[in-house]
Length: 191
Length: 191
DNA sequence: AAAATACTGGAACAATCATTCCGAAAAGAG
DNA sequence: CTCTTTTCGGAATGATTGTTCCAGTATTTT
Image (cartoon, rainbow over all chains, first blue to last red; front, top):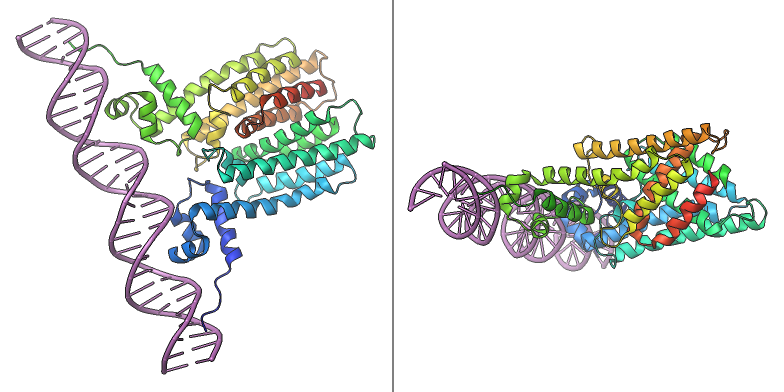
């Protein structure tokens, strides 16, 4: 009876995500979004309701992509090797030239005011899960003897989580990824 | 011939700094600033020229206060003890309840678009100097035998700098300072 | 008292923001 | 061709933004 469905919703959302990633929530205007998404104002509001709702969807998309890295932690046989592979991916994602620098989630934490905001809850969950993944893997590594028994697993996991945050900040400063890669190599050697 | 000087310029600037610290550059409106500073629009523009100029001054003030921590690195006799004292101060400043969470400088890096902006140059310098302070102290620690000779000083310094960044992000997530303090203790034990 | 300066309050401005609405063009289905 | 639905582009709205300007009120010194 009518015209076929829509444009490519997923693709358009992806474009929006890149803009949010680069400029943050307040920093991106609707004009920026529409230009990048390549659809009309009307279509955008029809499809995504709101700027806030669009951001929420974009953040969730980012998170899905980003969560793939965590598989290296969950499925690793060796703790150190799993951590190495995770950070290799993490550094690559944070420093690569064809996407914005840093991490959309980290970039946002700062920006949103209310800690009760749905967005902020999403961020907190994101990092709690990452911290848990580090902890579980380190624990397994300790049980298998790969990591010394006297190590404080809780502290090491929190250290890795903190380094994870720090890399996202460092990427914004653009000091070059080489230093980060070398640093992670040394950190793993100390575990 | 005339009325005496002004209100307390330094005090008013301090108030403005707290607002920028909490809400970021874009996030704070002139209304917010004026309410916190307690002076009139006219006086504000007369005294500080611009929002941008005001922010720049506020950031420099923050940086001066923040730089006092670095003295613990520059003047330390023991490397580990100096690093311990630095991070004790750093965590306290980042997590304390009577000032905004995190670090004004870190909170800003994300926000400003152009890397050529005077503000962004300020930020970069800030962290380069901190990285140098870590490196010099670690080197002295290695020469005095406090730190093993086979350690890669460059990597360790970059790790501490990255952890420094990460703490500022973690403070925004408000996971409680206890975990950060415990983590630093463990990290220093591993140096 | 008079003159000079410091500060205030509010009005006015132009720009930008997210959002809503409407009419027209486009495109598949009957 | 004729519906029906999707998409578009632009105009309009109302709120908020940073900034300028001016008249008026303090406050101090000559």
